[in-house]
Image (tube, rainbow, N blue to C red):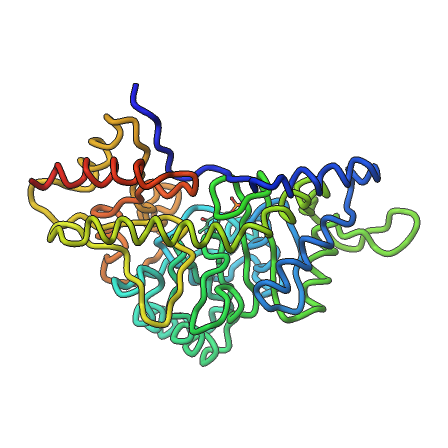
Length: 371
Ligand SMILES: *Cc1c(COP(=O)(O)O)cnc(C)c1O
């Protein structure tokens, strides 16, 4: 069997920072519930992306749920949600009994198409929230989306689960909207084994989210509850991993950038391959290097299959949410770019432990298909 090349796996620091923070929690017996590592991790993120407030959660999905609650979304409301994304973006819309209305992507950014969003607002001008996603580390053209969202008096939530460290016009991804969310799931650019973060410049709102995430426990010695809460806070152990991972985030971005540039250098002369779009206002974190296959003879699934035969993992781009059986009958605005991307694209191995020799194996297999 040839050496396995994975898509993306957790990559702890060579220096062992994560273990140090965890050991520290053990020594102080701060295993649970919260503690220094949680505060420290929240502070690290606040400083890194430049926001006033943050609360660490058990997952990115939980952070989106809290953001929707802060936006006042409830039963009967619609939320304009990017269709080209992972289910973790749209599932929380169902948790609050609201209805997702799916918005197409454009081919310039692969993320939300402002024209499709405008159309959706023309039909439903009272919609209260827009859920924008930044896929594969590429940033949406957030200012355009924000201008439309503001004009209709709606709240912008940015799902930056895949774009921690990405810069949009010099600003960190996820910090333009009212709320941003991050994920530290196992395959993300940094991981806490599982976790997320809700970020915002609104300190009061983040305090409210923290309260909901802690079972909505009122400040009494006995347990007093006036609202329904959730058990959504990140553990002190997981947060310790996060603090360690923050020390290597910049390095991981450099490694991901190298991977993308390697593929670009060795594949983009092929007329059948198009690299994912990097706009001049965008400095991506290059979480997953992705390509489109433009050929009558070989399609994206042929490439995935050919790589799999060589023990190399790749995967299709996200299947749009409006095409998912669970969303049958829900509304969609757009021209079908997201379907086109799904049918013709794939994510290439982007694991930060890969060497140039590994990357070259991937490149040679792909090139072989277009000879
Ligand atoms: C990973 C991911 C999420 C969910 O994050 P979890 O931490 O796994 O709950 C949401 N949206 C997108 C786009 C993601 O990639």
